[in-house]
Structure formats: C-alpha cells, structure tokens
Length: 118
Image (tube, rainbow, N blue to C red; front, side, top):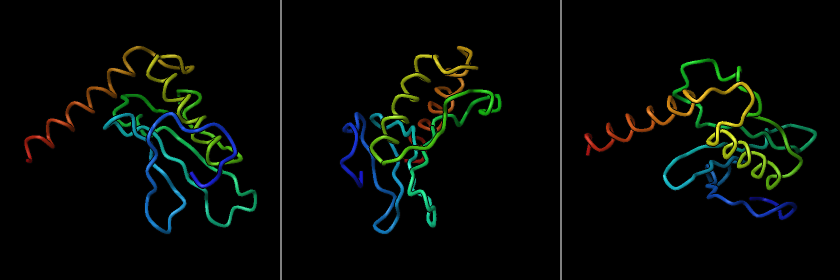
C-alpha cells in the first residue's frame, strides 16, 4: 500500500508494476480484488472492485457492494477485503447461493486447464 492511513491489509496485495498505482489482492492463489488510483483524478481517491466475480452467470451489477471508492489505499483495501469476505459468505445484497458456486466452478475449470497445460 502506498500510505499508512488505515488498517493493515488482511490479505496479500501485489503492485501491478513499478510505475503503476494499482494493486491486485490474493487469498492464497485466488485473486479477488483490484485497487487503483486513477490518473488525473483531482480527489486522489482510490477505486476498488471485486475481480472474483468472473464466472457469474448473471450480471454482476445485480449484486450490491462489489465496488467503491476510498480516500486512501489502505481504506480501499479494507473495503475490498470486507466485500470479498461478504461475497464468500453470501452476504452481499442481491446474491443467491448459486453465485458463489458459479465463481468457484470457473476457478476449478481454470485451474484444471493450467494443470493440463503444464
């Protein structure tokens, strides 16, 4: 994280590149979130979103709470981590139990393809 204001992240965050202002979040090997400070944004705020929603069979915009903005990178990381934990617990508004299974099924297919390619 680029600042010290806010709680320490609970998960692993990896910087996109040496000159980028973005990070990806991981729970073990599972990527689940993105945090970026948009260039030329006068507010200097951070945007976060859940990237683990790939695989949903419905439009992710039907689920409330999977993206947002924060004043600092640490506050953005916390919001993203909280949203991820709520998603995995099926607690985001608009979710049904099948949503988690859709995401996990895609994750299993992708892992299987990687293993076959090796």
